[in-house]
Amino acid sequence: MLLYLFLTIYFIILITVFTYASHRYFMVYLYYRHRKDRPVLKGRLDALPKVTIQLPVYNEMYVVRRLITASCGLDYPKELLDIQVLDDSTDETKELAERCVNEFREKGYDISYLHRPHRTGYKAGALAEGLKAAKGDFVAIFDADFVPQSDMLMKTIHYFSEKAVGMVQTRWTYLNRGYSFLSRIEAMMLDGHFVIEHAGRNWSGRFFNFNGTAGIWRKEAIYSAGGWQNDTLTEDLDLSYRAQMQGWRFVFLKDEISPSEIPVEINGFKSQQHRWAKGSIQTAKKLLPAILKSDLPLKVKIEAFFHLTNNVSYLLMLLLSVLMYPSMVARINIGWFQMLVTDVPFLLVATVGISFFYICSQKEAYKDWRSRLLYLPMLMSLGIGLSVNNSKAVLEAAFNKETEFRRTPKYMIEEKNDMWANKKYKVNMSFLVIFELLLGIYFTFNIYFAYKNHIYISIPFLMIFQMGYFYVAFLSILQAIRSSLPFNKTIGSNEGGRQAAMAA
Image 1: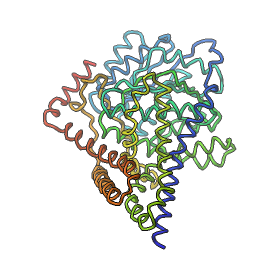
Image 2: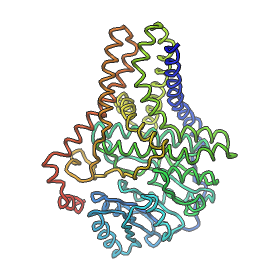
Image 3: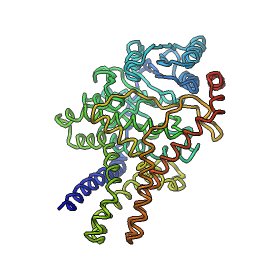
Image 4: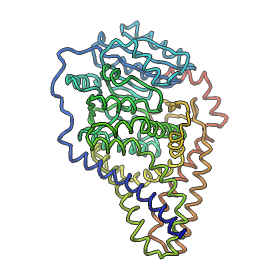
């Protein structure tokens, strides 16, 4: 009886994971089904409006000049730009940013430096504070890791000729995509979100979200939705849903790109993933009840549920990992043939579904998409390897544990020979690496167990888990050691960092 109860729990978790994974098929379907419904510019504004550019910054000494310079280089009438550097920094970034602002002000730019001596509300608080002084009716936002293209405003502003449009989002691309094995996999993961999910949701009339940067808002839409709020770690996701619930229409421009710098060290990447995972569950708790009770179309409600709760799948994946060995023992006692007609099909369909999703994202965005598929197996492993890190985030959100907004370090890494280990802003390695290592060892044993019991069909799936946990754990340890070497501390001193920033 206990055996059957255990297997029941295992299969409930497996089927739930399968459901979330299979949702990727639906995203691909929406993308191709609604390609003809992609946004079309239906008119042009009679006159170009004044636009406020908000640049939220917190300790970004390596990239702040690059950000300000690119923002001042936007191909838009200078007299119609209102540029705000919203700086909460506590280090040399303050002097660097203010000096850069003064340089461009002397050149005739309407640019202001707004420094807060505190981080109340974190990024949401900084944006809300800046909005009080915003001169434009439209607000474009760029994070410190972005380099806005000069034609970005001219390619987006005229979509606001439709009075119902509240926000226009461009697609992220990556300056340092080819920097390392990790950066290539990260870029593929983000491509799936931007190329397929955003487009599929937006073009089919479902809700999608502003990504915190590389987009432009109608200021009225921000205020009518209740403004920037800081009760979640994903203030962008939160405001996006509130604005769309108020009736504002969003536009996603898949073919208009905004270059950015993605994390090059895994502990920073894990910190970013933790924030996004936790924030999405916080937003789900905050808004899903109202969404489900509203008179919104059923298709919008269903997709909102999957979108906002998707990170629960990491916790389910972790539970599935822990239960893997007992489930194999139980199935051997029942008969291994039952495995072939029960969980193997679920795992196979889910694996193929996720692979298909990312293959389509690469095919739709890049001409050389076939060469990128070599990274697909490791992309799937990395997703599993992140389950410990992201499960912690989900549980923190579920049990209302408050944590600070930890921004992702940026090092101005653009070329292969650029270095990050000799710079400031490292993210400390989490104690969770112990659990990632143990899970890697655990799956090594599971592979041996499957081999000894002739369950050969399970071995490829088990290896995906094993590689994922070991990759995340070992890379976390190796990069933490590399960044702590004595010579790195010397090079990464405050004066060295100042020189690097000035050179940039």
